[in-house]
Length: 240
Image 1: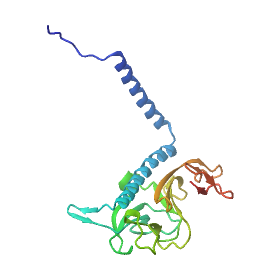
Image 2: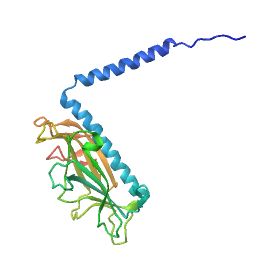
Image 3: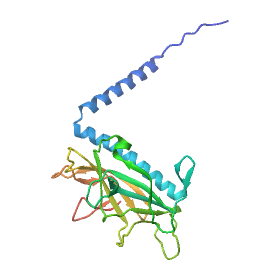
């Protein structure tokens, strides 16, 4: 016997649909109620996270010695994978300057020279942020992170596999601050995130700001993941 069954929503399905619509409406309403600065900060965090994933993938390329595709039929096999963190108009930024580009570069030579750009991560192209984000780093001028393929030493006398070029200090970590421009001149950017390059773990991690300084709301006082802060300066993390 043929029974004509008409499909219909059950009560549970209707409740689920209504709940989903309500959640979307609440999220949209909250976003519209937020201040302009808070909306910019949320959007900037999405942007910075997208850039960090690009850097993280590049570290994976280094670890697996992956070839880099330059064009449809052109591949190169680097000996060194290089992260040039801060650039402005095609040239290096000085320490303390604010820049808007990060170059993922490489070198096929036996030493990390003749550096060529594989990919440029710019704020405007990656996130459509209209230059609202800026980067500034903690080390000296014209330095960049060099990573040996497979994270392996080149010879028994050279143990460097993840290091800053020309760095003669004993520092094992280096920071790149991600700042959000709050005005057109970007004279005092708000520190939202930080890239932490760590030679010990051979990683570049991402640290969000949890609390800001009471006297200066643009300066980050406490970041996610920090275990011990400097006793004389609570803005400096001694150990993650």
